[in-house]
Image (cartoon, rainbow, N blue to C red; front, side, top):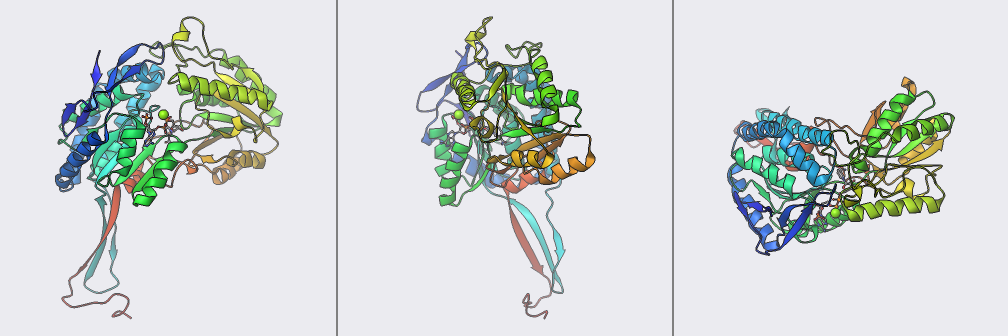
Length: 493
Ligand code: NAP
Ligand code: MG
């Protein structure tokens, strides 16, 4: 059986624990390999290596650091198909989406490599004569990255590229569910010739490896994407330790459909947003907020089209919806469906674990739609992270916005309308980090900030120039060339 190891200080190594965990294909239960389960000591070894490597790396000019990112980008391009196939078999998303995810990592590599020649600071006039003032970005030190399974390479790229180009070293813990994609990514860094110790991969559980990273005094910042439960616990502990955290967490994203909307377009956007990646995207559409005048019409069209979504192994090009990540996720989704029924919502489609045609060996859930959902119901408020959509009807745009904003999350939202005035009102008032007009809730591009308001995050953003703020400190520098003591705020007034 293929064994997946850690990559620490430029060497592939097994944890001293000698423990391994099996990696399963969620489409059929096949064992793909096993992954080493690291200890606190392994984390410490990785951190020491990172710390040593960063001392030299911070002195490498940023454009030279960026050269490694260009190499990574070209290697990712070369292996796009191979990695996409691995991603689908390990994580389950359909192959087209897996290719898109690898493309996102390629885009991010080129984009952040370009930052190596920017990393702009300010030069500003001093208030004193013969004095110069400027600000520069400096690396934070060792960045601890903790990533989820649903975008195993994209999110690792969103975090590791800006961390490295700005002069940090990285200790990365991928999700237990997706170590093979992590292995492929680390291998590419190795082949690109990134100096040893700058990118360390430490496999293992959140409770052991993740926890040790948060506690480690030489990890200067934690960049985390995952659930609110884990993110808020990390934040609480990091707060005590005065450690910087960047947290990207859950969503309860809605599509608003107004009475004048192009319903065909809305249906396309909704199906893609709700059932792509089997609803396991942080930006997945899980609510539709529809104007009462078009509710029935929209429901009819959705029910008709949902039947066309073929389920199966995502490596089959004709399949539209793949499995969910594991058994416990499948059960959690089904629990929510039962909760929805108990709450009085009406099931329009789906609502069951799929057990026919050999799919019972995988974790398949039928694309599900509830209607007559009210904003107070749990299915309208809590993140389900599966292919379950709730339809809520409203009487106006104002009410739609209120419903959209009435949840604890604030990641993504969308509105379908032909009225430019209403669209602009929505862009202003929707309280989410991402807003789409006449498109679904998913489809972020890497050169814009990605993240959410309220319970979705803690004010930071992945991707875009905004990501640089996570991995750098500002240093303000004053150079006095007057040859005498000049006291700011005093000698000039
Ligand atoms: P999760 O359980 O919170 O896991 C995320 C990562 O945290 C994994 O690597 C996990 O390791 C680790 N972890 C678990 N317990 C930990 C602890 N005590 N200390 C430190 N690290 C710990 O989330 P998930 O179930 O994998 O992912 C789904 C969630 O991610 C959803 O809520 C989704 O909305 C969110 N998400 C958000 C975004 C965004 O950008 N806003 C993007 C994608 C996903 P193990 O794998 O070993 O448990
Ligand atoms: Mg988990």
